[in-house]
Length: 500
Ligand code: ATP
Image 1 (cartoon, rainbow, N blue to C red):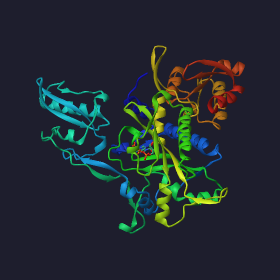
Image 2: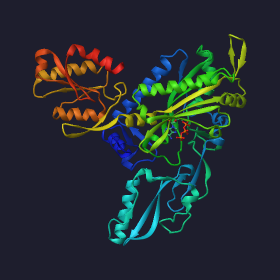
Image 3: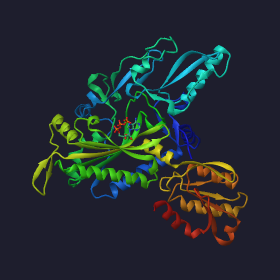
Image 4: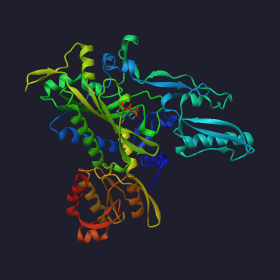
């Protein structure tokens, strides 16, 4: 089935996956809150990643470093000087945009079939809403309807250069040229640490978790009894003052990353194998948690697009409704970061290789993925609309291990105490193992449908027959197939289906 971003945002809101931050105060751009189902999905993603990347591997250890660190970390890493995006201002709207990411659509304004002007709608996540507002304005002015010719399809949006945009007359003045020339804008959020708010107290919220791994390299290596090649994994919040947060949780200002620095020997012939293996591992892992492979792709960065120190970089991309974009990056970063910190701190970042008695600064492979982006990609992978007995159904076909609720437990009727008790006993037994959901209200079909939208893979119904034969109906989400199963067989069945 086909769907657009509005469908995804709507189901997220309707079912309590994601809310706009500070919604009661009309929201706060670029920030989101995860509701009861959202926090479960997010936790499932992170726990599975940790299990597969850290616990089940002999060559990986974990870390949880602080969000705020010495500003010297960000000077050494190059973020203070270079973590910038080109920004332009719109003099008319007073809004700021990323110059390399200007998307706009040209809207034709007509009166009596005559074109009276154009408006460029810039970078709007809510193009439809903007168009509606414009249409209303024009209707007020002209008393006519249908006076806006608007290409509503997202594919009509064009990536614009600033020069092109400057030619579009502004709606306020009718004059072309309302954007300032691009200037560098640092994406790091600043705060001040301690009671004195002067320049010496300025600190930054980390824009990536990776630097905490590099600065702790020696600590972890010397205490963790790990030998190169090995990796350090970290899951944690990162903050970027994105000029134009957009596309829901795809690009936000506060997000979570799952990052690995995998340390390897420095010889030039060594890294390509590790690099290719990590691309393969990342891909396999994503498909193992239910990502739709037909929407995934690989994009190899061209030499000219790489940072000067980087040897290679491949993005795993995903086709979201708004376009095919980066989900995860796998980069061969050489020894740039460790060497920067060694020079800047004066502390050795060398590793002593016992086997051949030599010292070196290790090189790294860095697989980095955003939890929120992956969350969105999983919802897009799972989203489907179909028809059950002539009724439209929205269903999230999550892999059972990712589903926020694993099992719904329903007593068929609530006015029969034996049925209620039996169902409650099953629910109480399952809830120690899984996040399960108790629902007694409404027709059984309704209750199934609610669980379909939440992505719950199984529902159990306790009915009159249960009291006779100790069996229940187990209903499967995707096929809607119903089978009778002995109560005593339930745990083994769910363990197999959910944990594989
Ligand atoms: P983009 O080009 O989309 O801004 P990036 O190349 O700057 O991304 P990295 O610095 O490589 O991203 O960050 C690693 C990962 O962190 C990305 O692959 C993405 O999944 C996630 N990420 C980065 N910025 C954001 C953001 N603003 N919101 C949500 N996730 C993000």
